[in-house]
Image 1 (cartoon, helix red, strand yellow):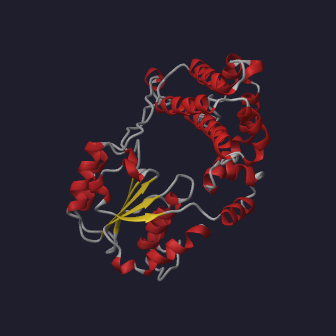
Image 2: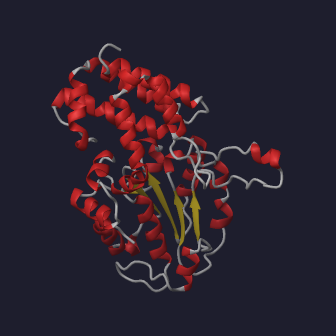
Image 3: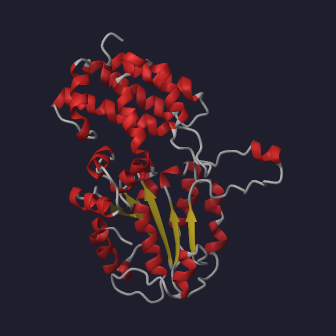
Length: 346
């Protein structure tokens, strides 16, 4: 289902469906629905019944294959896609299971040769979606570039990126870029409320106006409230106690997924410090419209120079947040740095 804020882009692309290039680059901040758009576009272009600006029929043979994940003319390439399945028959091996790669690997691109070397199964398009494209390293990007330089007939590449600046200029030059702007606030709020998301305004503000990011963050609403309370109490409670609580948030849920990632907590603190800086400089907030009183109080006793230094330190901390560092020490260090910048007497 195409989101209401994407309708104009959808209509524009489907209105020129006969003149689509061999590669599209969907570019914009995470949380605006690019991934959903790309998959719906792929389904529509492979659909055997839909026409005009209509979405895929979801009833034809092609749609049945696509939405069951088995379409012979579609490939999805994303990080970890070439990782072998771990055998669960060997307990020792299972205990040493490696985390899936966070990069798209060169073999995933090279393996497209056999896919592109034969005709399409349904006498239509073949479509390759690559997401997120910025997770290709230079060798992988160069392998893709060779394919884009000599495109196969009846083939469409759809690249999705949250950060276009991280892509090779040569990749950019061979794609038609489709920019996904931030949705209008009224459309984003209406969608969140229709989806049953509580505290939609607060979550949308914290997500920078991106509705899917806000919806994803809604499941952590209680932890987010605790996070704000902890930041206000750093001077009284101390980094050690707070770091212990945050470490507990990294534990896995019943599905084996972490409740939170270290990187998420760094991002939350970055947004908080960013608003402390903007209040010092402009008197307004960006991400915490529901916490303006607390932000103004803390900013009033903090040094602008120290806050800017803290924000820059958080950028460096975020770069190593995926490393297997001791979580409690990681958070203690981060909170200590924040305390020095924002808490009087630290």
